[in-house]
Amino acid sequence: MQNDQELVIQFQQSSQKEAAFTQLLKRHQQKVYYQIKRMVNDHADADDVAQQVWIKVWSKLDGFKMESEFSTWLFRVAYNETLNFIEKQKKQSSHNLSTEILDYENASSGSDNPKSTAIQIALEQAIKQLPEKQRFVFMLRYFDELSYEKIAEISGTTVGGAKANFHQALKKMEEILKKD
Image 1 (spheres, rainbow, N blue to C red):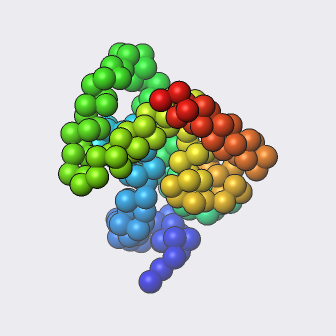
Image 2 (image 1 turned 90 degrees about the vertical axis):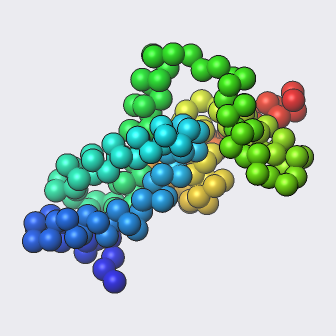
């Protein structure tokens, strides 16, 4: 099985562009989707953003210089596309918090434990209240268990900045959750 770097080289040499891209897509599609989903919360929106990410990857992959890992570059593209989407959403309309809670409750209604569902809702709502950069760093560290070095590469900050964002996110979430 080829590694990401070999697939990128294969793509850039144009011999089997589609086959190489398909392998990269299959390998990373789920992680990209979940990274986006954690930031936008809606399945359809996450799907749309993920599609935009893969379109951008297809169009920009020829210029990828392999100065970082492909996955780091990919997550950076996903991060930027997600931020662009969120900005567009903010401009188009304001979110109705009660509708979001209802949607979340409906989506997680299959849970057997009502207390668990309440905790999940509280956590999701606390995460939504974080500034975008802190939310992104928190999710990469907490859910994806990435190192601060990898988070710094993806988010375009320093390792110290990534640590500070994570620490600030934890403090804010603790304050938010104590209020509820």
